[in-house]
Amino acid sequence: MSSDGEMAVFGPAAQFLRKSEKERAEAQNRPFDSKTACFVSDAAELYVKAEVQDRSEAGVTVKTTLAVREDQVFPMNPPKFDKIEDMVMMTHLHEPAVLFNLKERYAAWMIYTYSGLFCVTVNPYKWLPVYNPEVVRAYRGKKRMEVPPHIFALSDNAYQFMLTARTETGDHRPAQKALLADPSWTVLLTFPLVQLHLVDA
Image 1 (cartoon, rainbow, N blue to C red):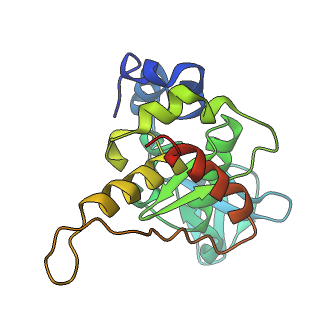
Image 2: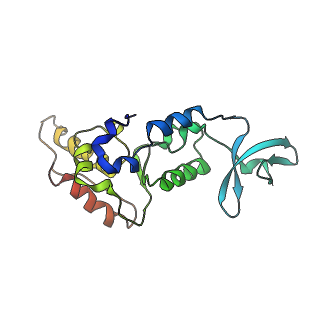
Image 3: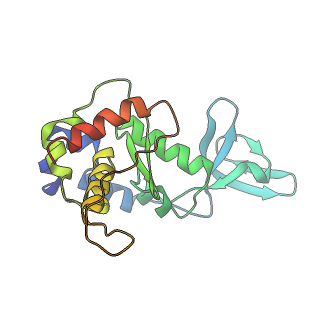
């Protein structure tokens, strides 16, 4: 995890890419009881944070004043996982934890989040400074885990691998193509950003 000083290379975009050291320290020290902290199904919000007060055969009573069935209660991750950059690191990986993490990151304008090998992007519907020239330079030549989640990290890693990959016969000839796969219409938005990053590589 980069210190605030190391994040300075990202310029004004740093706040949109990674939590500050202060915020990470506060999350580490926030009280948390893994036996009672949970998410529960909610008709209006889909899932809400709650605290288990009682468990019985009739159901589970939670602090949000809802009485729910056992299968509607999902364990919550400790606060140190709030706004986590790679969701596979979560202790409890389930739909409410993933949605809550994406929602919290989006609320802080951190639109890129990893989920293992994939980069999840939540459209901010406004232009953020995360595509400025200093951000492009900051991602150049870095491994994916050395920098905050971003499409530039993926494109630079693919480009570096393309340059250093060996052919099937063992010859060291740079590959001449890389595949950008986006299973939705957002490829129309993503591809120009990858081009922006690779243009002066």
